[in-house]
Length: 182
Image (tube, rainbow, N blue to C red):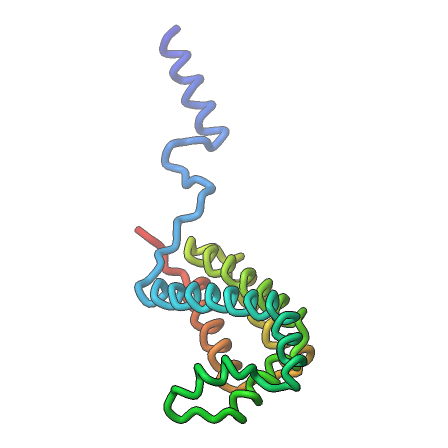
């Protein structure tokens, strides 16, 4: 009787293909290389910095515009006094820089902060070697380039495009290559 039960169990195991040596449905994790780690850290720093700067400009834009207009579109004397102590200071260049920042609408800075946060989320997902992070990062970077080129009234440099392209290609190569942990 006991022999019949063993034979029955063995037949059940063979017919349902549930055996211990079958591979499970969990994919083998992909190993993050040292180069990938380094570039991800650079992206975290860059995205974090962009969030901070764009939020700062976006939130202070109305105040800065008010100060600018009150002083006949010139930087206040107090600010000029601080900058005048620097070597090579040119007040006209400083006023031109401020004018260019204030000519960009406030929502532009806030949208850039939002897309920078989206980029940071993508980088964090790529840190965990999730392919979705690559798509999130790439979309955010593309949106930032398009926003700057078409809505921000700002100059978009070839260097910005090249750096974005370089990082996206690097991430694509490292996220989608079949480098499995053994």
